[in-house]
Image 1 (cartoon, rainbow, N blue to C red):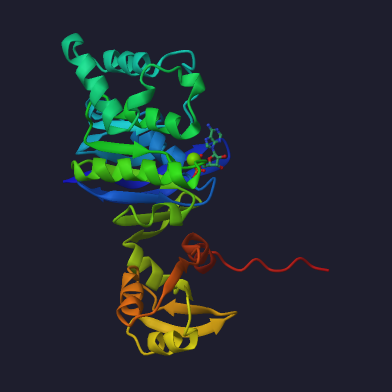
Image 2: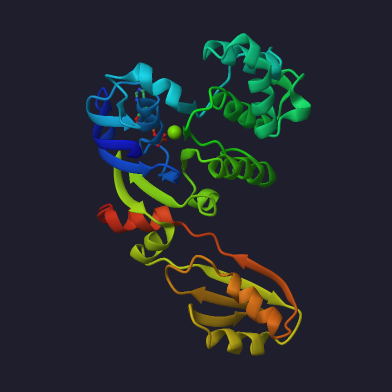
Length: 314
Ligand SMILES: Nc1ncnc2c1ncn2[C@@H]1O[C@H](COP(=O)(O)OP(=O)(O)O)[C@@H](O)[C@H]1O
Ligand SMILES: [Mg+2]
């Protein structure tokens, strides 16, 4: 059974079409990246899955339960983290979670333990007796996540949990998500930046204008978008020799040296490039850095699927 199944979903707000025939299947155990530019329809879709918004037409199911006709059975199965939380700033972290535990009918004798577990799991340990108001954005995102976990749901629907975080806080929250995935949870996580999710998700879906333009693995997406990674490699010495070595390797499409840096382009679809460092180190090169150029896969897809806009007349 699919954890999440969406079929031909439609939602409009007045004349704005937010979701336009969207279909998606998420298997149990997936960490599914839900990607697309701002305004693509991610939040609207997630709010429908979370039973907070009714679709105009089409179906959405969580573990076989319809989100419209069977919403009361859907709610215990899902943990939803909205894209902004806001309220309850004058509560302590622990009070806030206890409040939600009670709201989810966690029995009084189990509540303290459940709250402690969620605090532990999300790394909020030393903040439990602090006011929400004083928390950093990263800590507030963790609190939002802790809240979504309070009733131990199997399916998590997380709307941009890593957005607006500094790199370190982002990595930390992604680590928490990985741990949750290892516990067997199914995760649908949205972002407007692919690079934020690519090392976390096993599958991605890219949407634009309320419709899926790609779903599947990241590797296959890179092939389909004809986009490849570029690596910038800095070495202590023998840069030209290293370039020659890399040129003869599998999975490397082209190599050049620019300003003393080796720039290697990987074959489309090559996601794991750890072999590059391994080979260089094996051959005795001093590797200072291997930096990956940011790939804009969503852009590549949107370019492929959007007709060229004709230039404005002069
Ligand atoms: N409550 C609403 N009222 C009117 N328009 C909305 C509402 N929510 C979303 N929209 C519009 O629907 C489209 C999709 O928005 P949204 O689902 O928030 O996209 P995303 O989360 O991908 O940025 C946008 O054009 C947005 O302005
Ligand atoms: Mg959104």
